[in-house]
Length: 359
Image (cartoon, rainbow, N blue to C red):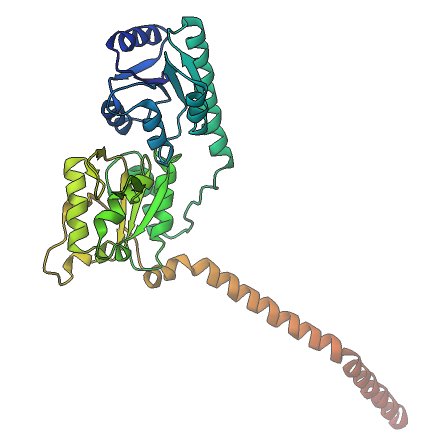
């Protein structure tokens, strides 16, 4: 079984080193961070199973960092706060923001290990509960060879973290395959956030990266998809400014909110969709291929109907035939007695004629 990963965030090097040594000896995989910047970077690389977070740190304190994480959908692991100068108000605020527990310094080894074990167990139960009560996996159905081949391609692509481009006409099930891909990936428990490219409009940076104004943070698409998958629907409608913004975020592996100063590490899986031949459109600026890397082809609804709809057509023909036979049977039943009587009358008349003629 894979060892649980714990992130220790504390500005005191001695405490970081001691906690790493103790927890490593207990069999945990331990990462350390000296401040909020290092903590954000570590989280972006891999979401831990548990965070031990010091409250009093220079630059950005633990409560502020916890508040930042609490509004980001992609973060749901338990957090245990640590402090040598904690107050009731601080503990209440940390709990309100989602902290699992609060431990005081100097740390008690027995209490620390017990709290870590309980927090990790709570995190595991929460993930299992989310899977049990989450939406049912919608597997695209169809017996056509092209549908089966595409399902296999999606299943194969789900095992990697590379961007994926789904090609096909409108109505060909691109979103369904995008959701299917996300549900099979390692990010399945994280958000699936869809952006319609045509809706980005004149200010794509704010829509994608979010904004900071007067101390208020407006989350962008990348914030809301953090840890999960960002589905960009209709890539052919992505204007040049939006292309440059996305390409810049990919190249720098991070972005900055409009009006903000802090660089946020990029932590999403790119899934896009477009119509076949979208790169050949007339445009003053060619489409940037660095936004995608894998193309999965999807046939249009019209071309897929011949093989995919054949079973349905057969069922309809069989139903029509059964209905026709049923109607014929009802007509026979309704007119049966009259015809039977006429037959008997003709036979009786014939017998009488034979009797009179002696035949």
